[in-house]
Length: 89
Image (cartoon, rainbow, N blue to C red; front, side, top):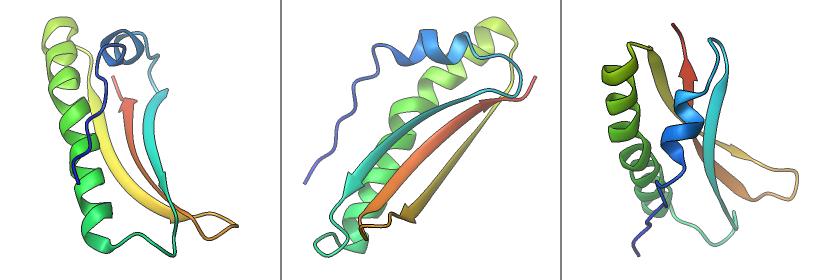
């Protein structure tokens, strides 16, 4: 299974972050049906979708960012995997 994420609006949202603000992109899965490999693939796809944009914005504007990924379970036992870009300077 392949995961593609539309990057068209990432640049403006990331570029317009104030210091301390974050941009997040996430995907939700049925916790009873998804495997670890699928979660790892989605996390990688999310990172690959935002990383080049963050690099270009940072290089062009001088702004600094962190990129972090994580997963959590919802009350309904679904799993959400997310990537968060935070402007640090």
